[in-house]
Length: 429
Ligand code: ADP
Image (cartoon, rainbow, N blue to C red; front, top):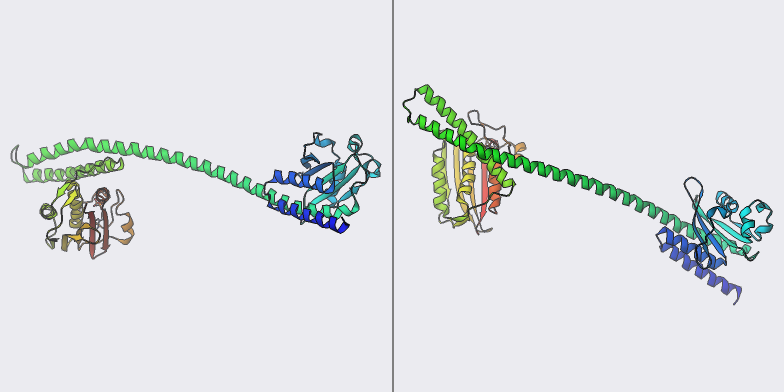
């Protein structure tokens, strides 16, 4: 083989190793691979790959012989007399016979280990020197040639880039792992707080539900007793007494409605609100609702209209619950309308197979900034008429729960000073 042929085989091998190094992203295997290949290429007996630690000291990451076996001698024994200047001055060093090298007479390890041929080159990436490659041969002097230096430096520069990339990659992975651990911890804490909040909320809701439930019976007894008195069961009342007891009855009725609403909401939250579905003939049902609401107090300037399509299909719904929803919508309409019309209407929506039941009024309407809160619990608008009794702010929240429990939806549109239109859509099952 001619020199040129040997050279071309050598460079081909060098190229292949460089490619392999560039593809290895994990630091330890990369360092071992680079050191092992360097020993093979340059015929070294032992090789050391060192990295510079942040404090400037050396980290002996690979210590192997030409067969890839780990060397057992402690790091301190390896001559740093050669390594430090190579790294500091960024300059390779070739020693033909270390035992005879005048600059190494003080390097005790050289004599103890009987080191002969040495070649050492820095790993350079741009203006940084992350480490160095050190190759030695103890059995033979003059084994490394001047002509080996350039190829070794080329090899070292390729190794240095790959090593730097792997270090960055590892740092990045460590940062990602640390951040992930932090996030996981934060998530766990959040989950814990969330569970605590859910539990606290559950206890509060149960308590609220129980209190509401237990208050209903005595309030109801109070209303019955006072109604009996106003009905004259215990003798005649003076006008003042009658007015006073009637006002008390109204307050108790308000309290009763509030406890009923709170009780329903607590049940809805605990998913204990169940429906008693039955076939409901809609036309007569809506007439019945209309008749009930006819008796609601309203201004003489308000007309109450029923506009229901004939022959509506039968619905499988909880009659009491749907009536509760409609009474709530209608009582709101009555509360917030001083003149014009209140209409209870219903249509068969053939396109989405549902029944639309709506309550439209020409009342004061709902302010824009309150619209997104309207279905939230205990939310009452500022748009109250002077004489209207303040509600509980629970009616629409319960109505929404009940309609959705039926698989339907509730929506509304409203304009201040023009009126409101609340619509419920119930699926025909
Ligand atoms: P409540 O009527 O007991 O206060 P609701 O949940 O039924 O509770 O209604 C919440 C609020 O929505 C009311 O306080 C009122 O401000 C507004 N609202 C509901 N219906 C109407 C309506 N038809 N016209 C104007 N405002 C309405």
